[in-house]
Image (cartoon, rainbow, N blue to C red; front, top):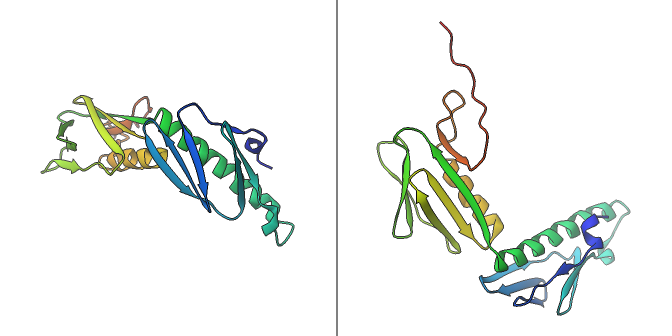
Length: 184
């Protein structure tokens, strides 16, 4: 059994959770998120906490119990991330390393000069916003943890750090191990 299932998810003040059929929606001060649930999971909620449990009614064979616990733990984490997202939000910080590499905002659009013949322009999807506090720093913010992480990974993919020089886009604080170049 997943250890997370032993604990309930606390609902802070100002957050409301609704379960309608197989969809749970969480509404808070920063916005609203919805998640579709599988029939492998049962959710019990009241005003202050949510309990996630395995639905043992769908068990066909004995080996299904382990799979049920995994899904229940995953949905526990998804619901907890939804509550954290609508109250605090999620942030991914990126840094750009390299001579002439820089980023700037044009309206809501992120424009990066990364050594290509043309600047790279990225439109933020709904629910995600960009900040550029410095020309070599990018901040991705949003309420959906998955979406914020995916957008940050897509930005990083435009210029993956080179292992010989260290130039490229990386997460803030990420260590890139550099290799020694060719010796003559």
